Length: 406
Image (tube, rainbow, N blue to C red; front, side, top):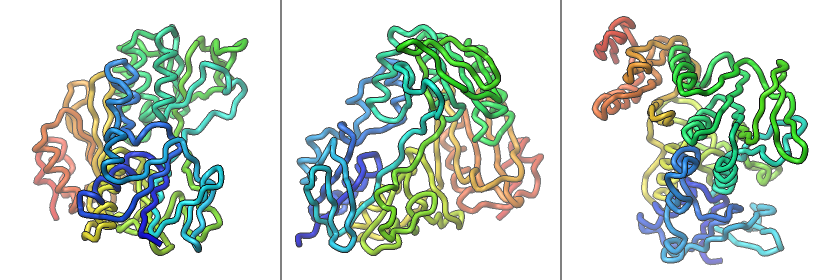
């Protein structure tokens, strides 16, 4: 059998595997199978510039479709993998075609969760993940007047800001007691709450949707607390579910994702996983984690491409994710999801310049930044590689980074 790398999934991580492998001199044939009708693309613009009508779908592409052909990549779009045969090293596609492989990359990502309530299938109720999803919401927003956004995380917050900037009246509903609760920084959440209310967004917290209502199309919703909300457009942004069904029963280890090491190897030889679906060992923080953000997919895909080409390129990255809300850019570095004991805030998001330091066991493990220059961010990035002990919390607040010691 000719040597062939098969990649299942068509997101950023898959595209970066292809790019890095070829750039590193890899010569094996590549087949990339994606159920999406578009070539791999960047997702962050979809809830920002694309939704606001400031960019088009083509602008989000990692690279044009013809670039894959020039790189000798068999790009199979709109194609579903029905099963994976590890013994015979084959993918069976919908329709019966078989694709052989010598090395397999799982980059299947995730799909958005849907609300299991009455009326969730009404026209006008949307989830947000793909270009097709984003285009449906953008088209609906052109004629809608009132929008309802469910969820106070990344997608919910970004979608609300973009829809409001388009001129829609927007109500945002979240079960949490504060916006963007996942940040774990009450002061930052309070600032975001003020920002959104000042921009005319109606915020409903500690409540959820009991049902959507409408006669043939969406007209509104009723919350579990009994509030009636009028809306002709709704976006559900309550997290994702992983695409791992294909791997069940194959012997590939699964545990909140596909279990891999820092070289992205699964429990089965010659099978790898990257991106949202990969639960990997982070050598910087010393524990397994899974990250659903652009920078992680970008880094992991590139590193795996180089590894497959024979280079030494294990995971070596201080995790970073970012968002932009009503023009306010927020970035988070490190490992805030591994549990923190204390968050120390310097500055204020209201004033446009803030750093939040996340401490675990007396050590600095993560930082939230907004309005900071590149030099400060780079310094924090290097500090977080070391996870230094903090000997003076007050000094951090006052702006003296030497308050940390190795």
